Length: 449
Image (cartoon, rainbow, N blue to C red):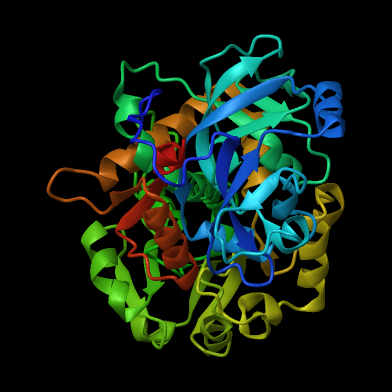
């Protein structure tokens, strides 16, 4: 656990008493590395007057952040609607300076952006009703120390959700979810692992609900690409899990995972798949008769889907595409193979016109988990849905961290160099599937204060 009062290193030559906080930014035209930036105290009367007129209702200290393969998606869509991830935390060009002497800070707001990560933040000041100092929230955050918002409010239907006012970003990413641990500390035991795996766990949870709700679209076999990803692992685990109330019994359908040669051993070790095959192999190698498949495509490798739909023994009844974790060029990705009807539905879905996109039912679809969570909440009620999701989150963490049989370990990065190296590793795709990354920026920059 990260202390609220990290041990401070002795002052160094880089100590700067004018700095309010530090954070990491990336070049918009490169996005392969991050540089340290400091935000300093206002020195001009205009800046001070502006700050006084724009008082923020709530302020947070960032306790930790995480890096996963999902961060490549956030970078790719940094300046693309409707997500606009680079607009989540704009750079204050009047008070922000790149720490590197070699870096040019003159056009920092134009050339740089805060990459977003999932993290945990603690309230330090609050004028929001029923939000107290000390409360912890999980949210999409910058890789930094502090964040604040001019306005925020608790959701009228769900007081565990704090909604910050950011009209230019996708609404789902403006939600801060309150963290609580009613089980006497067990939640804290898995806090780092849960944080790092959180987006994949939730998407796997939603896919599990989706497939069961639609009776697997009539498929006999479930195929998952990027089988080593957290999304795929969570889905496979939940499909094979016997719910304690028998509401979601173990699925008997065959689950096949596509993965790279280097990750086959890892996927087999989890015991979650009935069969693991490489990307150069076809589904015909797994059967001798024509079979109906549902494809859950996380890798985004268009060639894999293309070879499958051309196989006479393979009938794809549904393709749910999650993203492009393999960083396949756009013109070679699974999205490039979408027919016009599927592309129209994808566009409407991304624009949040779900009422309109629901009229279309192509085989190929972009999958976003938000709609399934809304449907589940409507069916079961908010409280039950939240309880179930929390149980499944803990189920994943327990299964992944059994002593002596761990699938996943946590790499803790608490220095500037280690945080920068971890970011490069994520972008390059060199992080092992058995490793997750948690960042402690407060500790990393403590020597600068």
